[in-house]
Every structure is written in structure tokens, then in C-alpha cells.
Image (cartoon, rainbow, N blue to C red; front, side, top):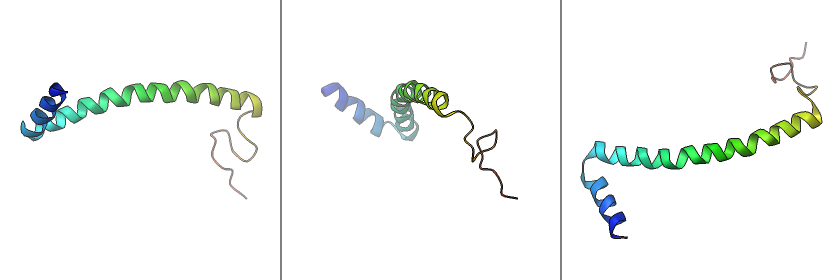
Length: 70
């Protein structure tokens, strides 16, 4: 606990760029694993949905955009 308090004190009192650097590292430590988890869940679900319903749906063109009414 004392180590965490020391890191927080150093990051806030060490100047602006040190503060930004600490928050950037914290962001990267949290963002990369969360992105991997999201992709690992999203891709199989998307695969199953496309296999079940086909792609593109009838109301979309080949790019997945809505068809324009002529």
C-alpha cells in the first residue's frame, strides 16, 4: 500500500509530463488487454451471425451501407 501511495505522490508532484506519462502507461496497461478481450468475444459472435443470417442483409448493399431508394 505504501508503494502505491508513493507512486501516486511521485506522479502528481513530479511535473506535468511525468503525470501524463504515468497516466499513459496506466491507460496502455488497461486498454490493450480490454481490447483483446473485446475482439476475442466479438469475432466469434460476428462469425456465427453471418453464418446464420448471411451477409449482407437484404436492406444493405455489398459494403453494409443502407441501399438508396430510387
